[in-house]
Image 1: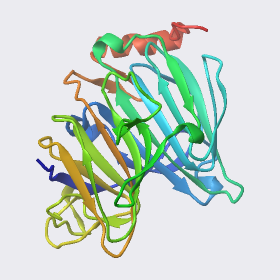
Image 2 (image 1 turned 90 degrees about the vertical axis):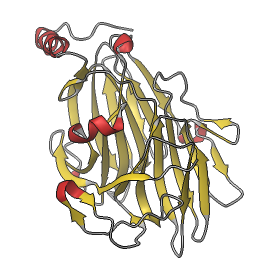
Image 3 (image 1 turned 135 degrees about the vertical axis):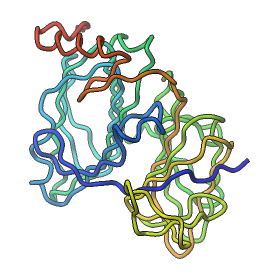
Length: 302
C-alpha cells in the first residue's frame, strides 16, 4: 500500500545559537505529528556573517543530535573530550543521554559557503539517562547505492537493497537517507508500518506520492500549503506522509531532485522540553537545569 501526503509546509527563517541565521524546518509546534523527531534545521548560506557566531558551549540531555554536512566544515568539541571538524559529506551522530556539553562552530568552505542540517531525535524514558556516546562518520563510510531507475542514495541509517548504513542500534529504528533522483524518473522505497516518515527537499522539484497530490506554492494559515493546483514540491519544502502504508513513491518530470528521507518509530511518551534539554516530566526538566547550574550536569566522564 502506497503512502500519501498528510501535510506540506515550507521551512521558515529563524536565528539560533549566538546569532546563526538558518531555516527551521520543524520544531516544537509540529512535534506531535513527528514523534520521535523533535527538530530539523537547515543551515545554508554563502555569507559567513550568517553562521560564524556558531553554537558556543551548551548542554543537551535526553536526545540525540544528528548533524549532516553537505558543504563546508563545522568545528566541534564536547565534554567527552572529542574535538575536530565535521566536513563535507560527514555525519556526527551524538547521543546526549544523561548529559553532554558541546559546541559547534560552522566555518564554511574556502568560498565561505555552508550547507548542512541538524536533526534532533527523542530518546525513550528508559534511555534518557544512558551514558552519552558519539559517532563521527566520515563521508567514505557512508554507502552510496544507485537503483535501476538512476536514484543515488546515501545511506546514513537504514537499508536499501540489502546495504545498511553505518549508524545502527538506535532505539527509534530510524532511517536517514540523502536521495538524488534524475529528471523523468521514479523512486519507490519501502517504509515500516506505523513509522512516521517525512522528506525535505534540498534542491530541485518532484511529486512526493503516487497520486501527485496537488499543493499550491502559496502558503495559507500556519504555513501549510493549500491543495489547489498540481505543483511539484520544491527546494525548502517539507513533506509529511500519512502513517498508513508500506511504500513511498517520488517522481520527477523535467527537473531532478535531491531530498532527505527520514523515518522513525514513534515513542508515544510525554515530552517536557525547554531549550536543549528534553525529558518526560517538568520535574526531570527542572532537575536537569538545576544540575547544570550547580555543575553536576555531566554524569559520565571518559
